[in-house]
Image (cartoon, rainbow, N blue to C red; front, side, top):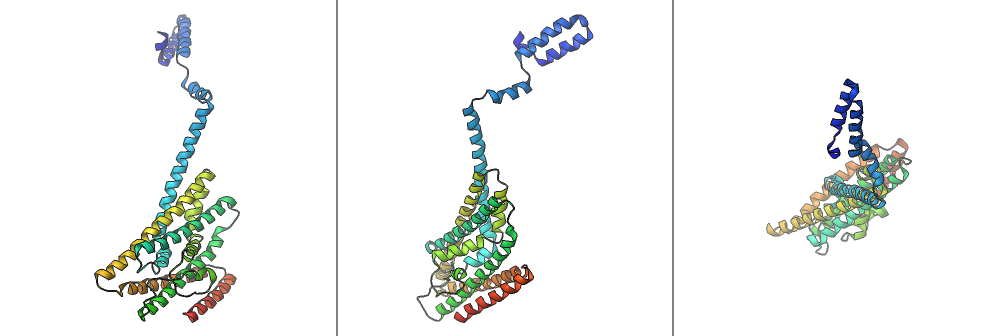
Amino acid sequence: MAGRISWRAAAAALLVATARPACAAHAARLGARALVSRPLPVLRGAVAPALRSPRARRAESQLIISAQVLRASIGGSLAGGLHALTGPDHLACVLPICVGRRWWSAVYTGAYWGLGHGIGAMLVGALGYAVKGWLNLDALAQWGEVAVGLSILIIGILGLQETSQWRDGDPDVPPGMAAASAIASGEAISVAPPSHTSSLLTGVIHGCSGSGHLLGVLPALAMPSLRCAAAYLTMFGLGTMAAMSLFTAAVGEISVRMGQSLDRPDLPAKMTIYSSGIACVVGAVWTAKALSSLPRGSFAAALSATSRALGRLLSRA
C-alpha cells in the first residue's frame, strides 16, 4: 500500500489537514510514506549523476565528443566539396590543364590541385585557431587575392601559347597542358604536362586566399574543441580533393570523347582555347579587383610588380 502512495495523495492529505486540524496526524503519516516511497524528481535527478560510476561518466563524455567530431567531419567534407565546384577561380584554373586528357591522367591534376587547396585552407584555419583574433587575416587575404588572379592569368596565357604550338603541327605537345609552377617562381617555364608539384602549389595559393579562408577559418574558430576543429579542416581538404578529382576527370574524358565521336580531332584544342581565354579574362578581372582593394601605397607597388612579371611572361611567350 505504501508503494502506491503518490504525490497527489500526499497533497490531498495536506489539504485535508488544513481544512480539518483533527486529520493533521493522518496527513503527516501519508506525507511521510510518500516521501519514503517516491523521492522528489528534482532530488532524484541531482543525486543520479553522482551515483554513476566514473567509467559510465567517461563513456558518456566520449560519446558526446564522438558525435561532435562526426558532425564536424560531415560538415567539413560537404563544405570542401561544394566550395571546390562553386568557385569561378577554381574552374577557370583547372579547365585549361585538364581539357583533352583522358580521365586517368586528368584525375591526378584535380587530386593534387584539391590537395593543395585543402592544405592552404588548413594552414590558414590552423593559424586562425591558434591566434584567435590576434592576426588580421583579412589583410593577408587581400594579397592572396592578387596571387590568385595572377595564377589564373598565367595559366590562361600558357594555355593559349601551347595550343597555338599544337595547332602549328607539333604532335608532341598535347592540348590542354599548362605549366602552373610559374606562379611559385615568378617566371614561365617550358611547355610541359603539369607536374604534381605545380598543381599542388597552385592549389595552395588558392586555398590560402579567397573564400577558402572563410570556410576554413570561421567554422574552425567556432568548434568546441581542438579535435573538432582538426576534423573539420581535414575533411574540408579531403572534400575539396575528391570534388576536384571527379571534375577534372569528367571534363578531360568528355572533351576527348566528343572529339572522337564528332570526328573532330581539333575539338580539344579549340576547347582549350576557349577555356584559356576564359581563364585570362577571369584572371585579369580578379587581379584588377584585388589590386583596387589594396591601400594606395601597396596598390602602386603591387601594380608595378605585376606589370613587370606579365611583361617577362609575354616576352617569353
